[in-house]
Amino acid sequence: MTETRQDLIEARDRLHARLDAIRAEIRQGLDADSEERAIQLENREVLEGIAVATTEELARIERRLSELD
Image (cartoon, rainbow, N blue to C red; front, side, top):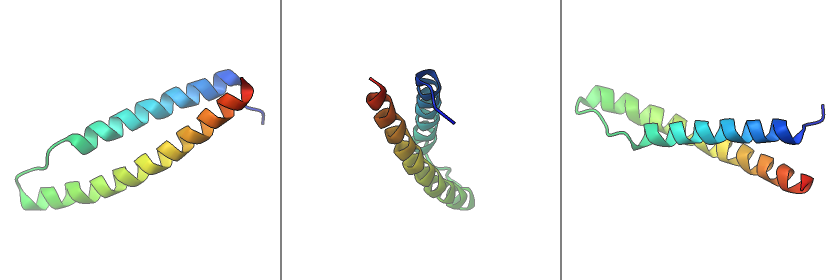
């Protein structure tokens, strides 16, 4: 399937929004309760992994858009 410029722009915008939401979640403070904090730290690790994958996909889309220009 061929990606159109508009498809790439929409995907880029979705990824930016996802990355912004992930970063906001990571910036939130940790709970005072040690059990809850442990869960939050585990979730943070997962979010950081998703952020890396999202950043890589965003770079791929940006490269593809630059190739279309």
